Amino acid sequence: MSWRNIAQISENVYWVGIRDWNRKLFDALITLPHGTTYNAYLVIGNSKKALIDTVNPGFEKELEEKIKIVANPSKIDYIIMNHAEPDHAGAIPYMMAINKKAKLVTSNKGANMAQTFYKVPENRIIAIKDQETIDLGGRTLRFIEAPMLHWPETMFTYLEENKILFPCDFFGAHIANGLYDDEVDDLLVHVQRYFGEIMMPFRIMGQKAMEKISNLKIEMIAPSHGPIHRNTERILNAYRKWVNGKTKQKSIIVYATMWESTEKMIQPIVDILASEGIEIALHNLASADIGNIAKDLVDSKAIVLGAPTVLGGIHPLGVYATYLVKALRPPLKFGVILSSYGWGGGAIKHVQEILGQTKLEIVGAMEINGPPSETNIKQITELGKNLAKKIKEET
Ligand code: FEO
Image (cartoon, rainbow, N blue to C red; front, side):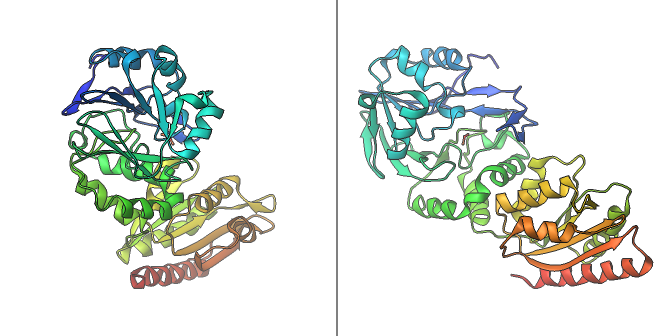
C-alpha cells in the first residue's frame, strides 16, 4: 500500500489516516507490537467539507497529501476535534495554518484545550453543544458528548445520512493492519487489549455513552485507531459486556519469583484452578507484556498475585502489578496473595497498603519462609479449591 493511499469508505466519506507501523510504545508505557493507525476522515458535502480528527505530530505533510487526492486542504470548512490528545489533534496547528478559513469544531472543554495545547485562536473555534448538528449540504454531522473516553473533552461525531459513528478512541485498537474489521482475524483480541489499557478505568462513562448511542442507527463504526467496524453488532456486543464488567470463569495469575519459591507456590494453584475448569491467564512479571495483562484483566473474575518479599516489602514487579490493578479498575471480584520471604515478611501488608480501599475480596493470603513445604502445598491447593468455588458461584 502506497503511503499516499486513501480509501472511500462510504458515499462522500474518505479515510485519509496514517498507518504507523514503526511505533512501538504509547504514553511511554503501552507496547504496540502491531503498530497503530491515526485515522482521520474527510466528509464532503454539497456545500462544505469536514475533516474528522487529524493525526500524530510528524505526519502532517502526509495527511495533507492524502487529502489533496480528493479535496483542496485549504478549502476544508471544518476540522472536527473529537479528542484533544496529540495522536489525533497534533496536526491541527499545521492544518489550520495551511487553511486560514477552517473552523475548529469541538466540545466546550475541547475549546479550552485547543487554545492551551494547540494555540488555536478563540475566534476560530466553534464550541459545539451535545446533540448539535452541522449541515455540510446533504451530509449532517451530529455531535455527541462522551466525556472521559478518553479525556474529559471527548465527543463522538455521527454522520446521519451515512449512519457512520466516529467515536475516536472508543471502539479502537492499536493495530496498523487492515482497513476493515473483517480483514483482521484476531481483531477482538486487539480490541480487548486496547479496552483494558485505555477504556477500562472509565467503564461507567462507557456505559453512559453506550446508552446514549443506543437509539442511533449505526451501519459503520469508524474509530481513530485500528480497523473500521462493518460488523457493528460484534464490537457493540463486546463493549456491552466489558463496560458492564461482565467477567468469565477466569483467573489471571501474575507472579514474580527470585529463587523459585514463589513460583512453587503458584504451581499448585494453577493446577487446581485448571482442573476445576477455571480459565487461566498466567503472566510471569519478569517478561510479561503490560498490554496482555490489561487484556486479561478485562474479563477475569479473580486474580492471584505472587511475589517475594524484598527489603521489607513486595518485590518491585509486584508493586507494579498491584498498582496496575488499582489504576485500571478491572471488574475483579476475588484475590489471592502468595509470597515467600528469606528472613522477614511484609509483602501482604504492602499489597494491601497499595490497594487501599478495594471491593476485591481477598479469599486468602499466604506468606511463608523459603520454599513451600508439603503442608504449604496442601494449604495452597485448598485455597485454590475455595477460589474456584467462589468464581463458579459468582454470577
Ligand atoms: Fe488515541 Fe486518547 O488518544
